[in-house]
Length: 164
View 1 (cartoon, helix red, strand yellow):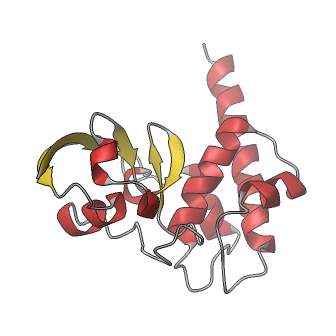
View 2: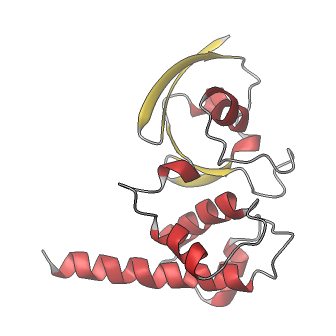
View 3: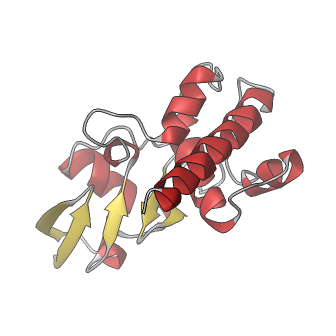
């Protein structure tokens, strides 16, 4: 067994884990963070995407021991005080889901995309989501949602900056 100390969605955890335990299994089975879904177990679909120290990773390709000393954010950790994250809200408003299975990973990857490129073109969104697969949609509403969230987040940043 290996000892890990990790912060998940703002809460610190200290656990003994098998060295081969995947982060996705740790999140789901130990911490009941079932919003992080298991899609393919091969890191091809992106459904299990979470943030590790603010950057997106496919949690099926990261060992829980690799998260030792780091901070993980799951889809459950995005909402603040009952308010959806702007990306979650945009996915809802733009109908950017059908079955919803890929949605947590898509949202997490989209947030990371906007951290690098706060105003992406349609093609840049498509390129940025390349490692996250959706089997139900044609991606157009997902792209629309990401661009809508980008605008909302930009407007919020501008408003916050002007109120100082």
